[in-house]
Image (cartoon, rainbow, N blue to C red; front, side, top):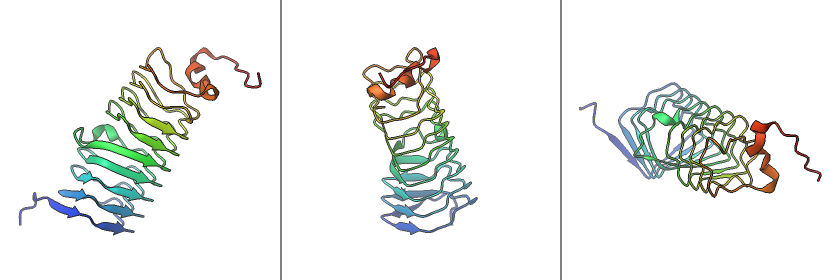
Length: 196
């Protein structure tokens, strides 16, 4: 049997499978669902996940070099310290809900129209990322890095704890609420009184 042959899984549900510290090779997953699976420290390099939904899965320190994620949805997942900048650039679209993406990096990636809902994005690197028309709904962006990022039409209205410098990012038509404008002014070390 040829070891380079790709195994295709379509419309399957994988529940409670432990892939921790394992290597997955030559796999393509189409419209599959992963529930309570552990991918921590596993190597998913050069596999493709299209229209897949991950629920309550652990992706801590998972290796995703050349991995394709197209229309992948992550709900209630732990996605800590993943370098998404190494993923396949042609299969790269996500939505994240109620997930922890702390210490992950999206350096230089194209994340247009990506939805982050109720997520923790502490110390996440968005440097040089294109987040045009993306939404950070009720997300914690403590320590997240935005440098030379494209944030045009990005929605920060319900985001909290972000700090970004409009002088080094493209922020045209980005959306903010009056309550979180301090995140744009942090570099001036101002004392802002919210009690009026």
